[in-house]
Length: 398
Ligand code: PLP
Image (cartoon, rainbow, N blue to C red; front, side, top):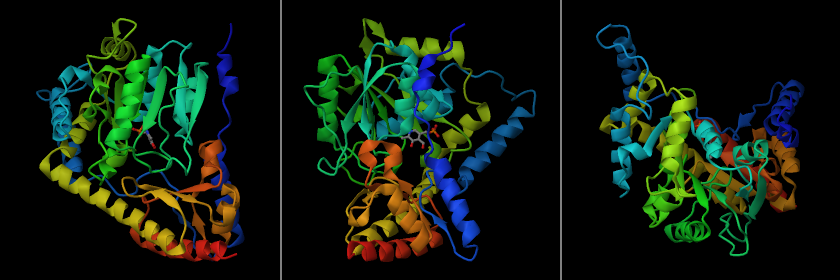
């Protein structure tokens, strides 16, 4: 037999294990020092009350013969998809129910969607990037091109008429940079994709962090997107579902490639290989979109946003360049004094007891940058922001 040799082409990911080892070594050497993690990409607040109540109620339904549920509908329960349809309508996007697929995570959906496309296609990903986009294509043996995200383009690369790609990833608001595309910028990507027979894979995992009116929550707010885009969204960061698992993917009926509707292909793929998210979790997900759920999850988002604002204020005071934080829980800072990102990681841990994520771990263009997040505890974030300000200011004046 022959194994998939492409797995041999995957770059080892040492990013989070190296961070863990360095932090453990530091804590062992300095047990008296407080270490605050400003690098985590996971949420820390518990599920909102209305979500917990829905989970309990649905669990009780499963205990009674009259209300027990077995396998659910292929694309997800109507009560959840109707709620999602209404959520899109709030942003001016009209969707048919059959365009919405409920899933167990944006990570799996983003990876699995690639089964619809031949291995021969060329992929365009931004650099720096959420590593899943790269690794899932390496596994399939696809050719990958990188669109440089740099300080010059505010970490928002735009289409290049000279670059020909078939599958294009856009994550806005972005992980790791926190940068978010405006309407006009997304229109340029939509036009490029329609003109070049390409498909945009639009990751909206952080859409609820958007504060600026010119930043769309959905790619389908852009004219022409329904003939070129698939959108992935998740309740992980928007409602604290990282451990509960629920996502949704929109494949428009108007999206055809090679004469075939991608919606029909994705339905076939999902019904063949997937049996859906549990009834209990779908009830919990639907509770997010009730008035009470919106209010409670909105409070958690506001908490994380306030953390991000504290970090942003510290960077402003220290005179450090950064992007993100406005429409995103992520801040992407330039390492002070021209430091390399791992050197800054070591410096910040040693001098401030603060842990972030070195930008180099997200791609070559991430070197010299550093990712911080608002997902931590508010009191700890306040202390860490103060220490970050002092450390950055000291380095700036060196
Ligand atoms: N997309 C982006 C950009 C992410 O940062 C993450 C998680 O960190 C995901 C998708 C995965 O989300 P999920 O928990 O729904 O699999």
